[in-house]
Length: 132
Image 1 (cartoon, rainbow, N blue to C red):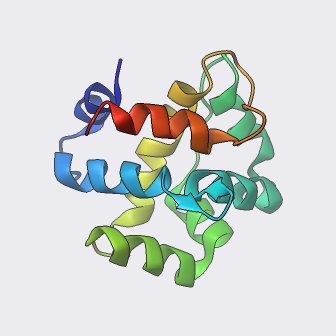
Image 2: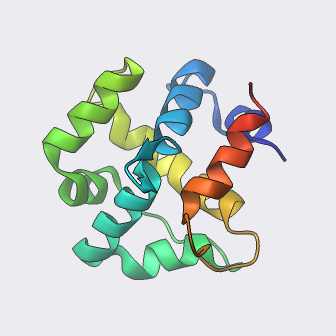
């Protein structure tokens, strides 16, 4: 399953395909030597969601998170910045992340462990190349 298929599998309801694609591209973009996704996973782990994040990385069932947990971990500034960069409402973004993060992390960690070196950035760039 490539990134287009992943996005299509979660698109629907209130989350449009273009919103999800924009958020996914932003999450996989570089912020220095790591991706936005690496930073979000770190923030979630630091805010009591380590077991949840690890379930997304592992080959076991993904544990759920909530929009409120994402808001708490990331803070309003980070949520606002990501939402602005992809052109969606900052109120809508946490709900999109609840759906997208587990699937995206799971897709980027097929071996059941976080990649070394570039972290998820290198793996994510490979997925993005399929879209360009």
